Amino acid sequence: MAVRLILQSDWNTALRHNEGHAWISCKTVSCSGDEETGACPSTQGELISHGISNNGVPYVVGSEGFSIEQITKNSIVISHLDKDITTQFFAPQTIFSDIHSQSIVGLDVSPAGALAVSAGMDGLLRIWETDTGIIRRELSGHLGDVNCCSFFPSGLVVLSGGSDLQLKIWSVEDGSCPVTLRGHTAAILGIAIVDKGRNVVSCSRDGSARLWDCGTATCLGVLHQGNSPINACAVGVAHESVNLEVPDIIPSDREVETGDKLLLLACENGVLLGIGLQSRKETFCVEHETAFNCCQFLSKTLIAAGSQDGKIFIVDIRDPRNSFKIYHKCNSSILCLYKHKDGILAGCGK
Image (tube, rainbow, N blue to C red; front, side):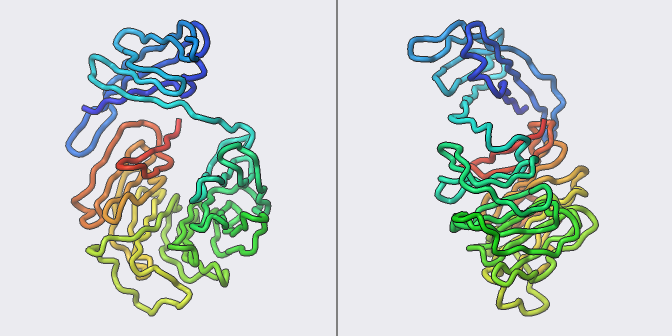
């Protein structure tokens, strides 16, 4: 049995008021084989504040079954005695509420960490300071929603993809857009940067994934063409034991550092594909009954993918048919994944 604690997202604000309340839930997930299924009921409770100490730390008690082990200004450690689980929760250090007026659909942080780029459902693409939230650049040029954005490894250039079928490359220094890539016939849903950024990959609602040369603004090839929208893509170096196949034709000299790369495609029809970036050939296929929304490299041998029904797949690409596990700790759709230390951060829908 897998157990986890879920705490009200704005707990730190709610508990700073005398007699403030925040809900807490202990969720038990039953396991069957390698797959975990969310079939067990949750235990609901609440945390109650009884004032604030002189150093700004609230006095908090938990309802029956929940125990407060430690609390500071920005964190709280909670245990559920019957389920033998303890979890530490951290409050955000800073909240920036003025960068977008609607939901944020794309976000990336520069390699140095000083800047972030974000795309919102308000149609805005903005570069801002991570310390202050001050907006440094407004990147205007997409005709409609911007669905994804990413810094190049240099931190001086940004790549974005939109519902207007266009990929755009932006200068962080002055906000100009020197390169626009066109070729998709439906909205662009995902992007990936290859190595240092001479080539980039995009995937689209038109069912295709494409490799681009940034220097000449040309498409070097269609990496995959299917009948289902491709929700996300990722590019990473594969372990030397993984057979990425050999290309049928000699790659263009504009194609750089693709030989040891594997392309992951998370598809709406419930298919997770692995494709040799240079060979354009499928290396593995994982099938599921609901859509894959996101994918991420964890190492040269392990990848992760999140599905619409709240499952996270961990796949060993050396033996993808037999070496994968499925974790189901959330009934909401998994919308994004991020490698963190030895684990994964997952973003879930409501």
